[in-house]
Structure formats: structure tokens, C-alpha cells
Image 1 (cartoon, rainbow, N blue to C red):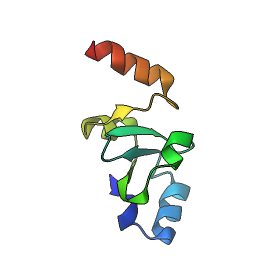
Image 2 (image 1 turned 90 degrees about the horizontal axis):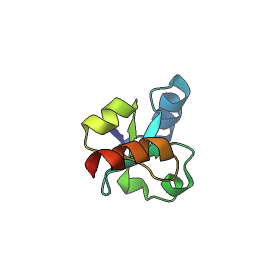
Image 3 (image 1 turned 30 degrees about the vertical axis):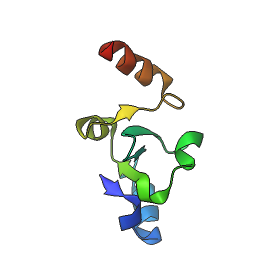
Image 4 (image 1 turned 90 degrees about the vertical axis):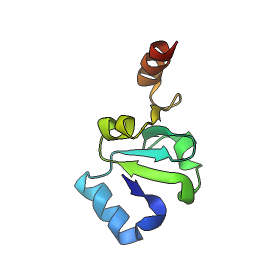
Amino acid sequence: MWQHIDLTQIDLKAKLKNGDIVFAGNRKLKIYGTLTCNAGKRMLKINRVFFTNEREAITQGYRPCGHCMKTAYKKWKDAII
């Protein structure tokens, strides 16, 4: 997991180009989603973290975004009820 504020613009672009970063999350809300999610694009850089894969996000205690990952979110929600 990488925090957005700890990455330089060059490092961020390199990680995106190499496929090291696939998902982004909100560290305060503990929600992760796709990099193209409109809800995720509005979050502050200080709250944004990046993940290599879904397993990493889930292991860190994050849940799927209800906007961009509807199927995964429904599965998560059904599991906690």
C-alpha cells in the first residue's frame, strides 16, 4: 500500500504505467475502488492510498466501493448481514 502524499508525481506515473497500482482507497473511510471511479477522484490526496490488487486492500481492512464495484460491494454487504 502506498499513500498518495508519499509519492512524487514521477513515482506515481511510473507505478501506474508498470501496473503496480490497480486500485485506490480512502484511508479514513476504509473503502477501495477502481482508479476511474468518480467518487474516488474527489477524495483528498492526504486520504488516498493505492493498492496492487484487491487482496491487498481487503487484507488491510478496506471494503469495496458501492459506486464502481457494485458486484463486489453487494457480495461484501451480504456477507456482513
